[in-house]
Length: 553
Ligand SMILES: Nc1nc2c(ncn2[C@@H]2O[C@H](COP(=O)(O)OP(=O)(O)OP(=O)(O)O)[C@@H](O)[C@H]2O)c(=O)[nH]1
Ligand SMILES: [Mg+2]
Image (cartoon, rainbow, N blue to C red; front, side, top):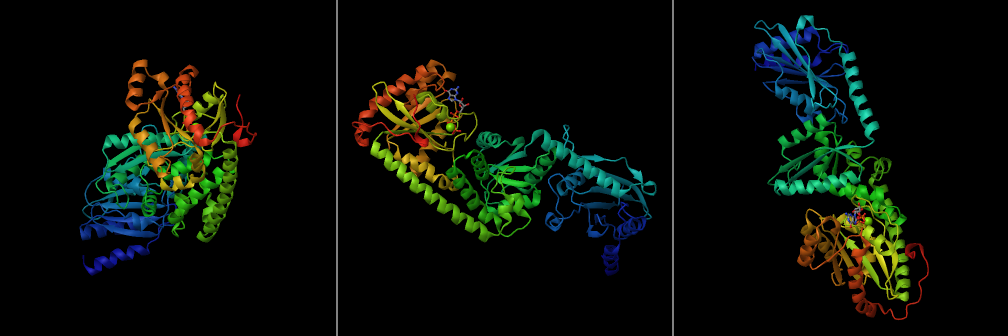
């Protein structure tokens, strides 16, 4: 390009477009003439205030994501920038143009054809549309001759934004929830990733999130800037737009920098598996202790993610809906968060002391303790209820139980033990969560025997058993005697149950069918003498009533 041509291009930056005009005739004409002169397509990126923000020269030239970061678009709103391209040949908008319109969430994308004399001819215009059942992302207007163009830009854009926002509003009113796109990217096989996404979907449902779609990518290297490849990330953005998703939930835990980069490029809230689980915990924690543990874990997880990026706070900040530690809390500076963490840690110490007292009291009474452990949703609470005729909440969703409950169980021979039910386990239980629930899980140390309950119908029995055993190892609880029990056998035939019980050397039960519990009770009773001897439980006095230790029957 000649210096004079460059200078002429640069002069375009001085032009202003009135707010009610798509592009002025003079600006269009001058740019068309320049395009013919330099024999290259030229694009103008124009702001709502009518300033030329960028001039792009060359075929297929689009602004870089990074250069637009100061123009923020909300999940369903527009970026406040329109791109008008001068095409040298008679070509309408290409598929790529439409993809870019969606990716960059432009106000609109237009292509203006120019004739040999440099006169503007046909104008092609496309704009985004609200999420719809057809999954269309944009609408292309009928092409019009430039001299006939009547396009009051200001009314067009305010109508379009109102339409986009309206859908957003009805969306959240009718569903009352966030809509998420589930994403998995790892070196694991597709089948494995899809299996894990099923569990992620169950977790999302447990957090009351609507799932709109899933995206899986097999990648070689996990340490990619966006975790996913760039092309796949584009697919994610387009899908989110088509389906009206406002949250991305990753099955893999994201490094703070990754979460930030993805959220910056997609302009969406980005959450990983740990945050999702924390979010569920925040919903389910009822005791003061549970609440303190969860908030502490949330803050510790968020700390490194708050590296001074003001705008990304709200998008990385909380969990689903309002279940994060709270935006106002996050907006306060890191020092305040550190103080809050210290405060919560002191609270926890206080709880731990109480727990010691409780434990001491129990040892004095010397009742043996049986703790039910197992994968989340295995039926632990249902079994506690069935064994002790209690009414602990049991629900078909992951992490229904967070707080520990203890009940007395009286054996036929008038002996008593304490049965406790607590938080369930899950594969790859994030370290931060294990830390968060240390005080709750500490209670398992008091157990004289662990009842490892397994859902016999689970898709991945072996990996669920392995996940629980690995957590027990991490908690140093391997030495405690264990009984493996297969639950939900009512859904299997007698033969299937027998085969599984033999394979796993387990007792098969259905917590729904009290008669199936007899062999289990018999087995526990048989184990009792050895347990009792360790628990020094000869001549047990009746135990006092305490909220944590309410008696049954
Ligand atoms: N068919 C069948 N369903 C069962 C049985 N036991 C429990 N369930 C169901 O399994 C689901 C989970 O039961 P919960 O008792 O809440 O499971 P949990 O292990 O306490 O789960 P978390 O507290 O979430 O870790 C509920 O919908 C129960 O009704 C059983 O023996 N047979
Ligand atoms: Mg439970």
